[in-house]
Image (cartoon, rainbow, N blue to C red):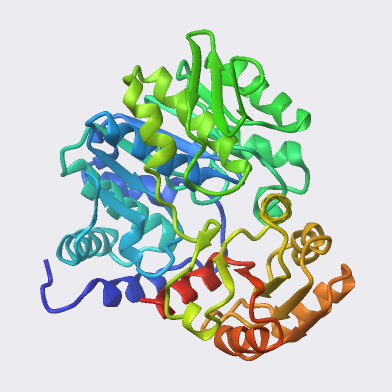
Length: 425
């Protein structure tokens, strides 16, 4: 290991290896894994998670449930918010700087200058770390799609999961829900059970067809398991019986469905009763309707009810709108920054009926940010009252001056969420 440099330097070097044209393929990943003596073949039992919305929250709940049952768990997720280390959790703990530097350096040297994407080479580094650290389970979250995602190299996972599929990343995954579902369903493996969250009929047809081709048993929402809220409790039911649990500690009605998928997975793994309560009560997942009360940003608007969310597609906009409607009535302001690759109007449209005002900003330090001016135009196009500011802090001060007791949601992008989390330390 080169002890003279840190992980940031190696990660910067890895960016330079990026192919000139993005072609989704697993060939580069297989080549590097072969050079590393195939760490993917010696991972603890893998639970592989794909979907458009809810992957991270579902993974967080499964991890919380497994840990409540006394299991040690590796977890891989992306993108990170504040630091790259967040992507790799070894037996419950974030990877250390020394360990991260070691596996990154080893992958960089084994790749020997060949073209490879940043996500592909860092995924290989995660698998190297997982293979060398003892644990009971490995949770792998897909980065993009599924079929050709760098995580899709496990021949026989213990379980696969497909959370709700919706329109996103159309340039890579296809321009219809059926095409996108086909890419997500690419993680289904022959004979391996697959937990399926709520799906539109068009997506479910594709998932069922792929599972039938591969003889993979489905554990599908609405067919094999049901979950709903009743009298302030979460009720889950399958052929094994009924569970009456606390509501998820992660806010939002959509988290009930994510909790259902997590519980279905834990049931399949034969986890004890305490795992289910652990899943709904102990999960931690930053920037998903995260309350920022008591942070340094809240000091700029001490009477405001301040929240942070990284959702960025139309389905996320719908989920946010539903959650905001469920909260006690209060003037609601959005501070919004988005990437120029997203369906900005589709995301904002559901929020237009609930938010009183939107302040548009550019995402600091992000080359693909939509400009504050264009974000403001998109907001006005869907019927929001909007203006712009040069920073989150300026926007917050402006809102606090005009309406001190407002509810303020900083939203639109995980990259903006990461910027905010770095601001508050």
